[in-house]
Amino acid sequence: MSAKVFTADDAKAANITLAEEGKGSQAVHDLVVAYRANRRTGSANTKTRGEVRGNNKKIYRQKGTGNARHGDKRAPIFVGGGTVFGPRPRDYSKKVTKSTRRLALRRVLADVIAEGNLKVLPSFAVSEPKTKAFVAAVSAEADPKKVLIVAKSFDDNTYLAARNVQWAQLVTADSVNVEELLHANTVLLVEDALETLAARTA
Image 1 (tube, rainbow, N blue to C red):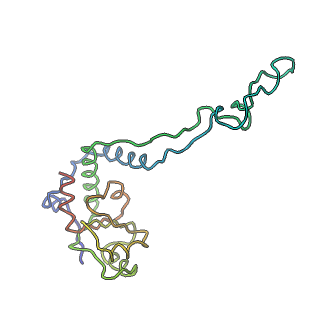
Image 2 (tube, rainbow, N blue to C red):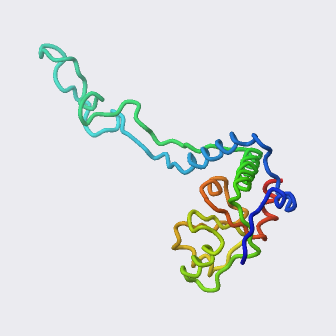
Image 3 (cartoon, rainbow, N blue to C red):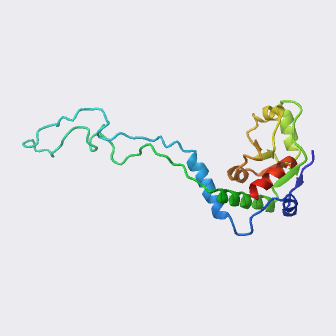
């Protein structure tokens, strides 16, 4: 294997559409916000005065005690009482249009290529499911720190060899997203993934 830097001219030859200068930054922001929002479970929950433990008996009589007028002990001002306007289970998910997703991918690919962080390989695989073999294969092509490897598919040996390497990630071309591309310091792109990326940016 021998990686070479992937340029804008190479992208044009592979029919990969890149965003024009100054376009797509907002699309990238919207998409990353949506990714993070969609990961939220929205399970935060507090109990109102109608849900906390306790009865609704008036804690003492209305008049004659010299104290303020109170109802039951589940009122929000008491310890152990209900919560006012606390979080309730909700859906944080956001929807992003296909055109926005396409534009964001074009923008990020253009930036990664401009920075010289995208390298192309004719193929990528390890012969045995050993972490040492995987680390050696990746280290020969890129600095072993936040490496994203994109291919059309990977064999079982490669997946098994990579699963204990925290600084490397294997992603197929049809599922790689903007957030993963932004997080990586180096992107190793296998040639069989070019056609899929071209279709996703068209």
